Image 1 (tube, rainbow, N blue to C red):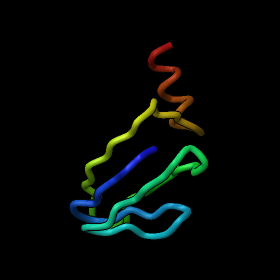
Image 2: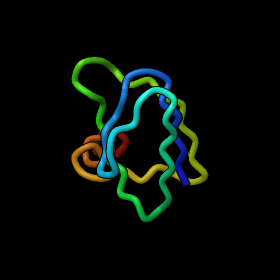
Image 3: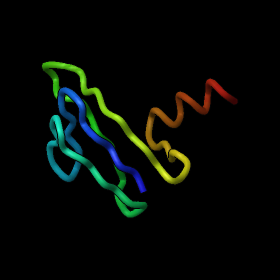
Image 4: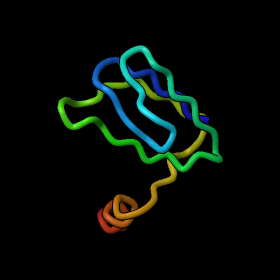
Length: 67
């Protein structure tokens, strides 16, 4: 499970927009790919009860860096 509290700015994912004060709750069934809105950064506090599972090009880039 992943919980994210938005402190400033906002992010958008497949479930909608999350702004200041919003809490995003996602379990293992959600393929979470958030992105910050274009006009300012998104500052958030996030906690997870499991390891981060990277996907896509970010996964490939990090895999290349750490071998």
